[in-house]
Image 1 (cartoon, one colour):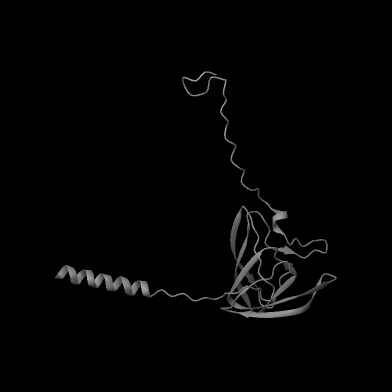
Image 2: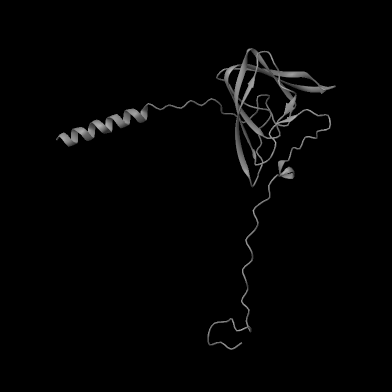
Length: 181
């Protein structure tokens, strides 16, 4: 009887410990924050990189783009992200969006943009899904040409195909025993 009671208490404790875990979806989307469809590329060398971006109070990033998919979660503060046309090295905003602590968003891909921190600065956790060795951020340059097809820029090679099987060499004495060659 004591053993059954002990087993029941242990099982109840385990079930309480397991049920204490919760999960909250912070982002589920098929578009980036500006409404562009999310498209994935194929690669033989996938890599996920998580980065914490820290922008001081009222400071801005350089004008940049991400040639790969990336997803952000604001840990502290707020950031306003602007996209638009670059004129003489300056971003002329066409669309902006502000994200605050606890917000998650799918970032822009192959679109020049700039982030500006709020008065308390901002700390953002960003995951980049790319391939090993491929840059996930490119600072603005008038000479940069946006590559919308990552497979043409692959930094890795596909795995080599297996070698073909060696055919039997009849007549060289390598056949089954007892056969004449």
